[in-house]
Image 1: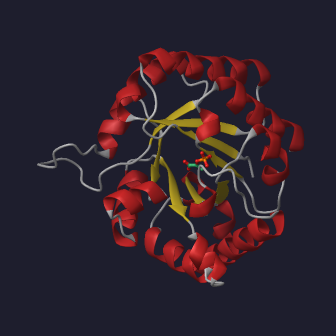
Image 2: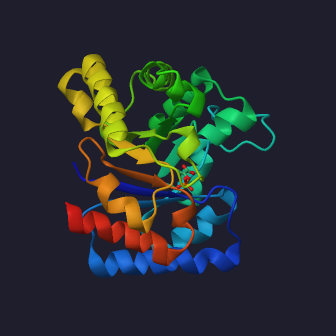
Amino acid sequence: MRPLIAGNWKMHGLAQQLGEIGAVATAVETTAPSADILICLPATLIDRAAQIVRGRIAIGGEDCSAEEAGAFTGDISVEMLKDAGASAVIVGHSERRHYHGETDAIVSAKAKAASRAGLLTIICIGETKSQRAHNETLSVCDAQLAGSMPDGMTLTATAIAHEPLWAIGTGQIPTSEEIVAVHARIRRRLLARFGEDGRLVRILYGGSIKPDNAHEILALPEVDGGLIGGASLLACDFEAIIRTVSAGH
Ligand code: PEP
């Protein structure tokens, strides 16, 4: 499976940072890595970023509405994301779940809308530190996967991002054994639900991936790429992570 390396800028980035996107696109054009490269951006930057990269890398949104259009002030539909030049979107990021009260049902509706519009859809799941301490990681991820991934998704255009909440932005990461155990479990659940087609879904790891740990994490079994926050903001860091995949696959 071709890995997916996806950046998530969160609520960072003004026009003056668009040079970082251009630099990544140029590096990808030059080195042709053996991975799909995506940067998910604040909605305000998507249009300009898409014009800069001209298809050399993919540009995505960080969230979307489940609704097509209507009286939903401040929300952004999947059609609007596409119109701006996005070909992908993240749904259910833990920051959306935590700060905006997004439930599995809401995430599932958003994923359905994104898939309907033909966007590559990254559905995030992950356990808290206390759930891990209480040995609930696998059951929490099982429940979030079942509740956040609707039927009818285009499986080749769906990625599940396992992001332990306690690893996001903290510099802490699970051990390789812990990552492998969760990813193997997610794969088993996908196979149980979709049969052999469950292998078409990419399973990403997210949480404090940096240039110095990327190679080890991204080479683990059932890790089909990464979702990268802080280290996607600077082209030099993101390019270094992309190079570790090219070297490892
Ligand atoms: C994220 O925002 O999804 C993320 C994984 O962030 P970071 O890489 O900074 O931990």
